[in-house]
Image (cartoon, rainbow over all chains, first blue to last red; front, side, top):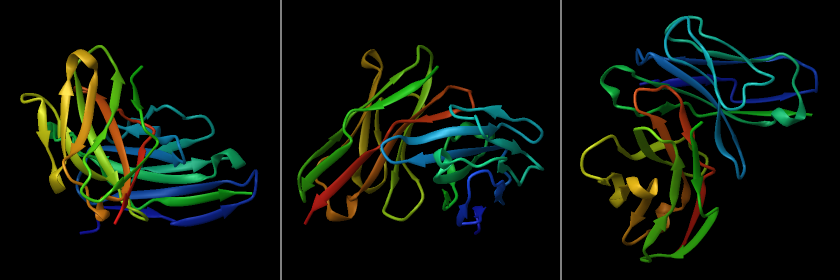
Length: 114
Length: 113
C-alpha cells in the first residue's frame, strides 16, 4: 500500500535554482493538494487540483507552479528558489466521491534553500 | 475567505491530565471540520471529523471534539492523556462541497510521564 509518494524526501538548493517536487498517489483519488509546513504557521495550502486537468491557487501560491499530469500525479515546481521557500512540503490526496473528506498525506519533502 | 485559529501554541501536561485544545474558524456557510495529528517525524493522520448530525464527535485513541455552531468552535478533548499523545495537533475546515482544506497554526502537545 504505497498511498501518497513524494520525491525527493530531502533537497538543498541555492537561491535562484529551480526544482520540481513530484507526488503520485495510487488510490484513484480525484483531488490532490500541495501544502507547506513552517513552524508556528501550521500547514498552508499552496495549490490544489480538484480533478485531472484543473488546478486552483491556495493561500500561498506565489513562487510556485503546479501541473496535474494525470489522475495519479501532481507536481510542484519552484522556478527560482528563494530562502523563504525553505520548508517541509506535503502532498495529499482526497477521494471526492462519497465526501469522506479525509486527506491522505505523503511523508513530506524537506527543502532547504541557501 | 476561510480561516482557522488555534488558541494554544504549546501545551504541556502530565500523564492522566485532561486535555482541551481550542479551535475557532471563520466562515459563514456550512463547513466540514477536522482534527489531524502529527506524531514526531511522521506525516499527518486524521483524528476525527465532523460533517453533520451529532455535534459531539468521537475519534481514534479516545479523542473527541464538540462542534458549537454558535461559537464557530470545534474544540478537541481527551479525558486522560498519555505520554504517547505527545504530538502536534491541527484543526482544519473545509467549505461543504468545496475543495480547499484550510489548517490552523497547530498546537504542540507535550505530555510528561
